[in-house]
Length: 102
Image (cartoon, rainbow, N blue to C red):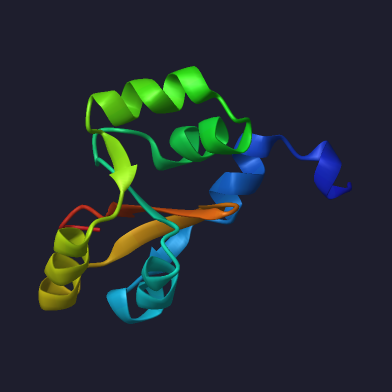
């Protein structure tokens, strides 16, 4: 089975992993980190980014459920060093805080 035979959702789900601030900082410095609220499905958001579903992404951004990570986010992550789930939807790195019991 080639990569093109694997559904996008499945491929992105298998490419999702945990990351800490130290690993994420260089991506933040490049301005490509996008924060996703825990109420959303990280893979579903990544699919919308990959498929360039502008209407859906703008809906989330307007609702402040998805946004480009800010300096404030970076300071918070640096201070707390939480576990984040991340997935690449090139050129973006989408991140979401893992639940406390995760």
